[in-house]
Image (cartoon, rainbow, N blue to C red; front, side, top):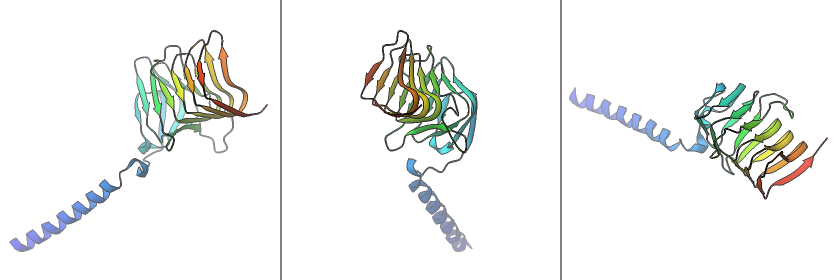
Length: 202
């Protein structure tokens, strides 16, 4: 009886170890299995992860003063409402794995959703880097001295609107835009470097 129990226990342990090792070897970020869709609206903070893709923005979302929303590389947000940043947004993708803000329509077109707005109260440490923003009224509206770099804005009426602010706009691509690629309003003095604008339409 003792030998049989030990033999059975050994088989169970080997099976469990094999399952655990297999799971461990397949948990790299490139192999994340999406648990979504994840519906979001209203006040947001915390972290959006690739594992919960796609995020469905069913209504306007707000990052309030004192709150931080971190969006990890590879996150896909399908938007029906606007995104307004009064606090801190840290959206940092990579060249190989960008963050995508897109339409939630089956047949997307420009103006499907409003876009991203950094209000005058947005924390200046906020960052939008290696992101794709598409099918909007405006890609991003900036009223605070935030940093926007290496992003692509396309299929919109306006790419980047700067209103009475001095943001850093560096190495962005703005294409397939109806009106203004980069629009500096009022007393704006943005730092604009190495941005590419192309393919405008009426």
